[in-house]
Length: 252
Image 1: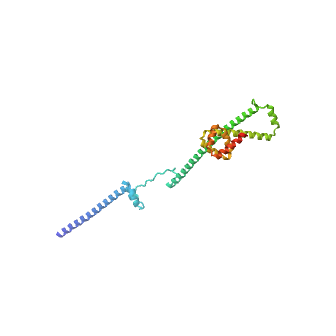
Image 2 (image 1 turned 30 degrees about the vertical axis):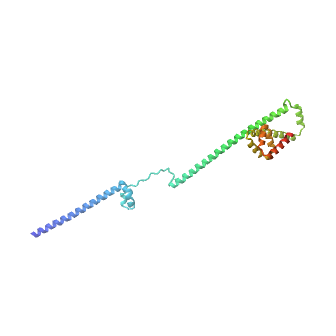
Image 3 (image 1 turned 60 degrees about the vertical axis):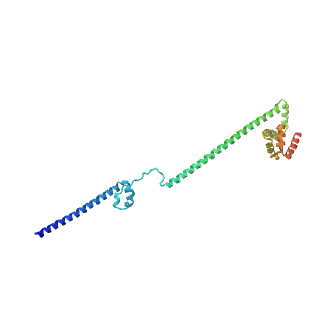
């Protein structure tokens, strides 16, 4: 009887021990499942970037486990954006900058050309006015010679032009025009040199050594005082040459 009771007690203890072990195992499994579930939630919802930054590089190639990774955000791209890479954009920007610089240079060149043309136009207008003024003076001179109070009888001019050879008449006319023009230029130069410093004027005139006749015409068209002051600043050799030329011109 006592032996039977001992056997029953041992059986109960063994059953109780086995039950405790199973319960412990179940609890451990539940804890593991809970921990794994919590871990999966942390990864899935990308808490603190744990899923995308930490676990994605590790699990992205694992067939089953990669399903717990958070969905990868797709970058929104502009369908109208023409460049695939940054290098393409940089190259295109450099091309556009080159074109802009080229257009700027062309614009600057065109501006300079316009300024040059404007200056040339002003010069041409000035020359045109001078020509018109000169032609007016020539016309007045011709009228004075032919129709002035002291002019010869008009019939005398008619006879002269009827008798003279046409080519010779044209040549004489050109010579008269050239002489009048030269005299006008000499007067203008004389006026300019008269306003200059005597030393500077003398030095400038000496540079015209090969045009000694022009130098003398310029000096003769200015006042005696100005002429003497300028010649006094000339070298003795050049002053002597000018004096001889002036003497021969006035003698003629």
